[in-house]
Length: 348
Length: 129
Image 1 (tube, rainbow over the protein chains, first blue to last red):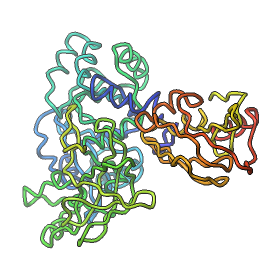
Image 2: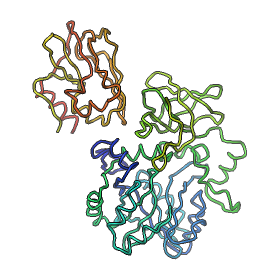
Image 3: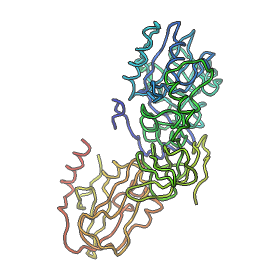
Image 4: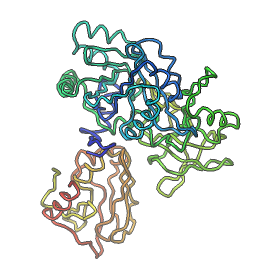
């Protein structure tokens, strides 16, 4: 067990690599109840989120639609990354990171007060992520006939209510599946039914290798308040259109766009028998230094992969300092793996 | 609880030693250590013939989580290494005291303050808190 944002969580239930493969090839389940669920309500909730989020909350036109976004400070640094769901009426539900809960609640709360928007942290809810190519069918088979039909009809990045449950076709693994928010009192029984239906219990370790293969950022590693989305591989999540939407951090990011970002995020593949780890130094010929922001062993590729923040001119290969030795790593465009398929060139 | 065979000796740095009938010693990492490291993905072995001083870092076991050095628990020369670990590092996870052995040494004197199974159990218990 390790401490993760104040929660005691298992790195693995058994073999981390087998848990990883279960999600890539069949089905696994993660207890992600540490994630903080916040319901945002009031007639001006949309206005609040339009100001707080770098992605455009206005894109959520129908109930259940989900949006991935950064929440920025005035200098364009990332306070957190989150998912926002459109709920009934003009209400929204946010899912934010556990480790950033306190500062997020303070930041959102400070901006909500003047708009008479109410925040309700849903500590009564647990969250289970059931992921993998067999996840949707097997999870749906545990629901009522109507519930099963409803969730199987969900498009990617949409959620729906089933009584007190909220089921969304989202995840953090690069595989299909659901994230299920449900009353904490019902989570243990649902977990066991998922196990009985073939879902392997998966810990934080597999969650990290899966998300990294999928090219997804981890807050605190790959971006934080000192870095902006445009140098963290998150430019696609910043909605500069419509031009009149005055979100916090916009001016800082526009200045970066004008002068050009000094750094960018790349994927790295190491063909040597060693493992990239966060904070390792990256040397780029004729361009300067960068840093590995996340690194691990990729069970799918059978070698080490990583994300790095490097000078914008970087291409081809770089040298990474691994345990006192410089090793050559190939620069690739993430994701490394999606839906069970390897998307980068593999070494010999 | 980890498995700590009574017929082996242990170093505080989590290596185990087995005395072989030819006077050499076989060295690996304990069940407690492999469990703490998690799934091993790479093992770097010393060259056969290399002379090791007591406590010298001589092999690296790297898991998904972290890389960790293996220290020579006795001074001596390397007479054999377990080449199977190059392709199958998971042998250490599966069978740390058997097929997951790391190297065999011909001792030439100094050995560290080696622990009995009972005393190593206390070290492992403390680490597991």
